Amino acid sequence: MPRSRPGRAAEAAAAVLLLLAGTACGSRLPESDFEHGNSRTPAPSSGTPIRVGIITSATSPVGGDTFTGPRDGAQAYFDRLNARGGIAGHPVQVRLCDDGGSGVGNNACVHQLVDGADGDAVVALVATTALDYAGASRVSHARVPDIGGQPIGAAYDTYPHLYGIYGSLAPRAGTPGWGGKLYGGTEVYRYFKREQGARTAAVVSYNQAASAAYARLVEQGLKAEGYKVVSELVDFALPNFRAAAADLKQQGADLVFDAIDTHGNAQLCEAMDQVGAKVIAKVTNVQNWTSTVPEDYKNSPRCRNALWATGSSRDFDDASQAAVREFRDATKGLKTHSQWQLEGWAAAMWFTDAAKSCAGTGITRACVDGFMNRSENYTADGLLVPVSFERLAKPPTTRRTCLSVARWQDGKGWVSQGDMDGTCFDVPQLPYSP
Amino acid sequence: MRGTVVAAALVLVLGPALAACSDDSGGGGSAPPPTPSVEQPTSAPATAPADPAAATTQIKANWKTFFDPASSSADKQAVLENGEQMGPVLKAFSGDKRGGQVQADVQKVEFTAATKATVTYSLTLNGATALPNASGTAVQQGGTWKVSVNTLCALVALSGDASQSPGAGC
Image (cartoon, rainbow over all chains, first blue to last red; front, side, top):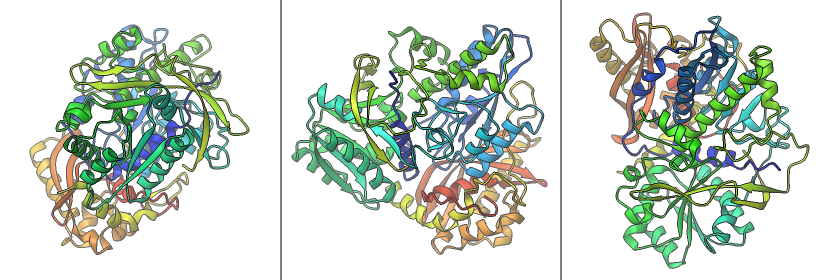
């Protein structure tokens, strides 16, 4: 039974749009600490290197730390792999490319890595995290498998040979989704209703197009699940978060969802603490599922401890899981940790599993692509909700979807709420435009 | 001061140039591609210019020039990668009345190669910070450290408008 979550694309895309309006919070590790770190240690494995490319918007106007998590997780995986002998004796050689957050830079990265301008074309791309994946069609055309990328745009629901980290049900023959429409489920809302008894949900958004569009999507899902929805519209130019917080308190909101940026969220949380708004959960997504919560929400202890994150991969803070412990051991050197790092780690593992299956016949683009195309309920050693690529001719109307849930608790970090493989719901699939 | 206030305005400022900045057509344009930033993990190329202090000073000065409303188009083109081909984008970026109010302050320069650096900067609009933690790249071209095409194109695309029309430069 396919159980990945196609709706993540919308979430990621919207979150990125919102980031564009936002400001950066917290102190982060400078780029250089990653770029020249332990990834350069020579590999003990000695065969012909297997080249993979990682395209990341490592620099971008929204901040140098925004999109680097998947890259760092993937690099950590390959470093460890090489230290253990690589793939059938071949070390994995990683080619990084920073597209600068621009389409033109992305196309240049694709040209460099796919066409191999310097005679060193890659076998596959891994953990692509690009603000504007303008080169996606070119990657697909060249039949280079793109493995475990973050679906920030609709590319992973559009093109063959692209395999997003959450899978896809769409035909992927060149058109986004089905006739341009993508579909997402209501599992997040079902979860909080069924497991936490929530009935009233507030959705906070800006009076701005991208924010409003995402808020509508959330409200549509909440209504489909029978919630009373409280819409809190905040002025983009002069946001009065205190008024929004007071109103959502008065209306008895159990949950708070948002379509605003990180900086706005910090202000919203402060306002909620100031007016004494108590909610079951302040719900956020994978992009904010990071170890930087104490800095990002430093002035709002109560709201901070009501933060819940939902996603499709196992909580990076859950050391009770052996696969998570391996990730944490290998990323000890990183100053911050995040769910996106863990997903990059899983993407690298996915490529490695594909390459290993090809070791006998030759680790070629075509062989790796064939493995990826056959992927069925892939979990990366239990780190991912099972992922498949289905190519359904028609969009699904309902789907059984599993959910990874964690909540923040000071002193404990992100605490898993139940097991993601058992937190599954049959939910309706709602259309939206990418 | 709220960052979002100015960010909103900044998005509006940058909007007009958007159409020129999303090439999904697969190449074929006349302008040379920007410097790709592929790194070579196994070899050990120079990771900084011979005189990093001088290069840092020049990068800071040239970024200031590029984002200074008082700079002429020629001055800006001189400190922009492939500046001579970037006229239309630059015109749209700088031509808007409010565009002239955007300024950049470089906080940190980190060299990643002899001819390349990561630049952390803040963008302000009318003196208020709009993007406090922006990150871009500087490239050395013809002996001069310049704002990269990637950096300008990413800024221009920030408007959030999903226009797909390809244009010259970006």
